[in-house]
Length: 187
Image 1 (spheres, one colour):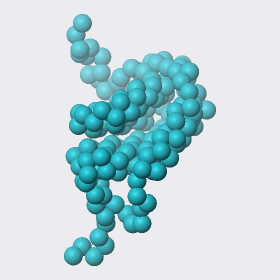
Image 2 (cartoon, rainbow, N blue to C red):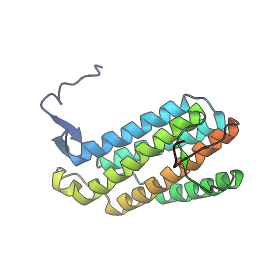
Image 3 (cartoon, one colour):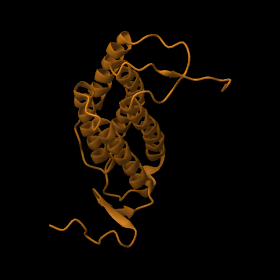
Image 4 (cartoon, rainbow, N blue to C red):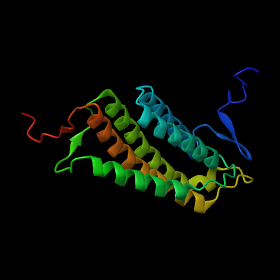
């Protein structure tokens, strides 16, 4: 099987229910989620077993989101995974020192890569909100996306960026590197 199909050479690509312009909100959103997944892959390549296992679960969830955004019925319990993220955030936060000031992304390489994924996650969340408000205008008439599922995905993405923040801090702690505090005076 060839990897290239040539069907997108004229600026359109396929989703469930038909073809859409590659610059459509649908494809832009799916592409941002794909970028997030790739950034998570970079963090996974740092090879921290505990963190890697969690990030690989999230990568699979991100693929499920992409499937949903394309119009595939997922029957996936995004709300259950949001609750799991909240529980993980609480467990990790208990292991960390309380924040009294802003921190800069960095520290260990793993932490920096997780922070990068976190910022892409925030962009994916913003893009998702644009998608929610306008996808019906650009999608093929036979494409069906569950509005309730989109709301649950939005909640999940909001929690995911918080989770990645505390996970980046945990990576620094495990690497025995202090978080880098923001210095307003730059001196």
